[in-house]
Amino acid sequence: MPAPTPLHPRVYSFEGVTPVIDPSAYVHPDAVLIGDVIVGPGCYVGPGAVLRGDFGRILMERESNLQDNCVVHSGPGFDCEIQERAHIGHGAVVHYCRIGRDALVGMNAVVMDKAVVGESTIVAAMSFVKAGMQVPPRVLVAGVPGKVVRELTDADIAGKRVGTRMYVELAQRCLAGQVRTAPLAAPEKGRARTRWGD
Image 1 (tube, rainbow, N blue to C red):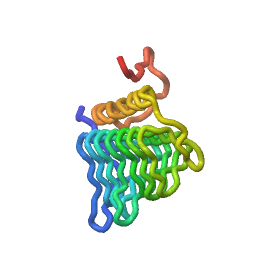
Image 2 (image 1 turned 90 degrees about the vertical axis):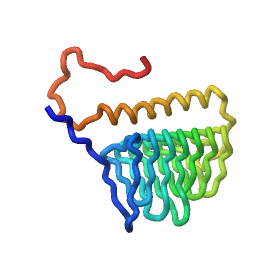
Image 3 (image 1 turned 45 degrees about the horizontal axis):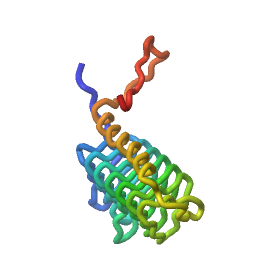
Image 4 (image 1 turned 90 degrees about the horizontal axis):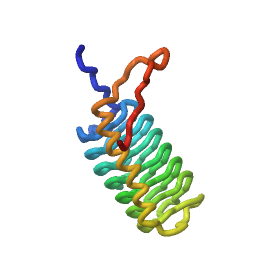
C-alpha cells in the first residue's frame, strides 16, 4: 500500500510574496498562511491558526509554537515576531507586536499593536496587553488591561519550558505520524493511547 500523500496548509501568495515553511516545521492543513510569513525550523502551527502577512512580515523563529485558532497579523513596515521557543496558547491574538524568546502568551489572550513581551515572560490566559506596552523579561502579566503582577520564579519558567518542549516534539511527531483518515465506528479492543514522557 503506498504511503499517504502529505496534506499541505492553505498557503496564499499576496502580490507575489509567498509564505515560507521550513521543512522541519509542522503546519496543520487547516491553518491559513497569507503573504509575508516565515515559519522557522521545528515550529508547530495548529489547526485553525491564521497568519496574515499582507500588511507586514510575520516571523516565527526556531521551535516556537502557535496553537489552535490563533490569529497573527502584522502592520506596514513592521516585523511581527514570535521569537525562539515562544509559546502562543489556544485562541490567542498576536497583532502587530513582538513576543520575546521563551515567552508564553496564554489562551485567548490579546497582545496589541507595537507591544513588546519580554524574554521568558508569561501573559496569563484572557489577558489584554495594550498597544505599545513594553513588558519586561521574566514577569507575569495578567488582567484587562494587563499589568505586571510579579516576577517569575525559576520554577515558573521551568514549567513553561516543559510545555514548549512538548510542542517541539509534537511538531516532529505530526510530521512523521499524523495522517488524515476515516473514523472508526467503535473503539478497538485494547485501544492504544498516545504516549508522552516515557
